[in-house]
Image 1 (cartoon, rainbow, N blue to C red):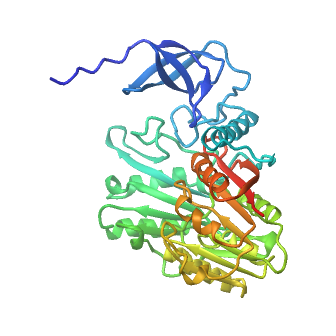
Image 2: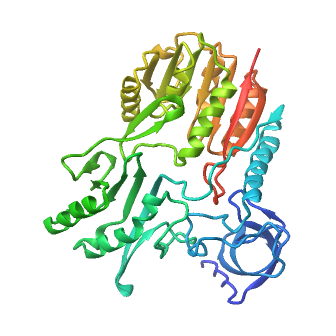
Image 3: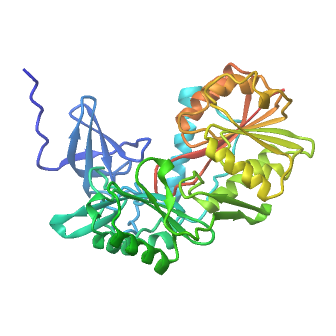
Length: 441
């Protein structure tokens, strides 16, 4: 007979918050069990509603705070209590960046037994209207006679009822209400699950996912919507390969890096860094830490469409960019040609495989840059160690994988961690973007 699951208590329980978890939730204990508490900060005593139980921990949401932390602020967003687009807006700006720094520091110390020779200054930019990319969920709710467009709720099951967003760049935030109205009037509104947004220097671009063929009358509305709001509108019926523009006079999306005299062209579903201002600062820091000379030969792994590759090319003799996505490599080559850079080559390669015999690896490198996905760069680290490079820059979107890889680089592969620091790429969230600089003799 299956064990009967204990019912969650209906009444709130009192919890004392002792710490913050990696995702920014308060940590407490109740009946000798860890409880992760949304909207709670260390030092606070809260009345919280338990909303989930697992074998090893419980989850709850703070409903009232008896002794608010001095680090607590009133969220500026009216939808913050239900929208999961942000998770730390109740925390002061300074405490947010301290939390991210402490997360990086703790991971390096506990997982890798490492501390850099110096910590880099925190890298920050504007905390509001910074997101130029987002994937918004769409839901037709017959009971409310309403279409919801936005991020998921904090419980993850439903779409948040919102009509504005303080972290989306303004041209994208201003499209939420018009999108709700557009989908509401479509005959297939029940079969539109999401809209992906991207902002170029010229105008917004939207990809509308649809699970049914779009009737002529709906297509007419979409064309009118694109014209009225001056956007590039794309449709996606299945996988990424089905993304197609609805306008025959489609123009290329692009963004620029004026300080490096560069322009990047991209497709609306290409990966580009979410925060443009932070991306520019991050590129400048990479260049500063690399300390390149005109004779430098650089290897850029996980290069995408050349975000770092092209600025670095302005300061070195040659750079090789390697990326696993063939379409991004094609875009990177196009962008190198667009910017008249002749000292750049791009290659497509699965960077979890051995490439010691690959064409792009058979040369001397003085510097290596890696910007891997959340899973890190574990498989490619021995290959990096086999280069002649004396400097390695590691840009990370996940402090745990950075710590794991750093442990191998330092303790097994002969590198020294010179410096490390955090970059606030996603303000008001617990996401930690960081950078570490390694050298060897």
